[in-house]
Image (cartoon, rainbow, N blue to C red; front, side, top):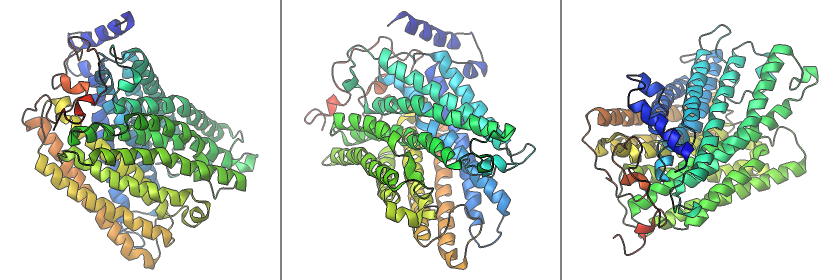
Length: 542
């Protein structure tokens, strides 16, 4: 290990040895595991808040006209729901919590390259989250423009848009610093013998994601600053009344926000690539293809942003090019799904809760991906753009994809992180509620969408009532499942039985250290001789 890494580890060591005590030993810790756990706690809290807001939205949709809130409140609730779920749960969820906790361990390091920067990233995340939530209660009222902050309305509304934009700007800084830390850690702190193609696929996914965080996030940061300046000084960049161009805002926003979709989904795909070999006892099929597909998704993802803007106004050639790239970016995703299913084929499948989450993910993500091709096609997108069809597609990919795998990762690594075990039967029971509720809620939205129900509307025509009612019932079923799931995890944390060091029979490095891991992860830095799933080669494990 080099001197800088030793110094970083020494800082973490002091946190545990008396430099700070009590709650400060956590809040000021530079240990990557404690920071990961603090992120996880924040993400679960924000997820619960976002889920509650979503349930309120579906309650309002139970009946036509007013049910529990007026139109302005509805606008504010769906805006805050989107901001919380996107910026505080889905984007940071897997990289910030599980990436921080496991990336150093899985590459044989004692910590990340920049522990103090890691702590700063966490506090920027918390500050950004608090500012976003505080916009509910400050003068001007909660923001009502949607999570995408489209201009010119975002410029002209009197709600707390500037505060929410500033919160998003701070969260962007947190994301950039995390990405820088992960890229440097992967390049500098891999264990002896761990070449790039001996890294676990979760690390490949985090590495690809980190590059998107570093390169794409500054674009939205600049855009946010421009909107704040426009609101304060009326400088006329986006406001058409002042000679500005609102379509320019859409381009700048989606240049970041479509790669951000892959910030959300790539780490989830990495988790899937870890869980499937463990529970099938097979070496992953097409290791290099999956690794290269992560890089391909990260690269091609920069060239598809305008498929969100087919109806906004652009040349036919531009629309055709963006449509083509939309179809191309589906290829590496398809490669992953094919390789996951091929790995399961004839495997010794042990259908524990993490694996069941993954099986559910593959079904839901495939539906989301296939319906995404409907939106990527120029002819069909015109008819379903701005309808509930888009809402359903987005939630199948982001919720059915990233959030389901966030909980898959939590159940997979729970015994390693806490040294405790949850109740398997209760978790499976909750999964049934979640799967039934999710599909009842969102598949109904596909039907509503192609029938013409516009999204973001507080009210609807009488002919949409039955499907809206069914969708709302599905939401309540799904929320019940998640509440059972979270309660089960909390019970496992407080009163669960002690977990074995390696309850699933995993073979990557995190399963070789104690549960929970010791201060510096390893007594001696391991020397890597084989690929991460080598032991699963046919004939070695039955």
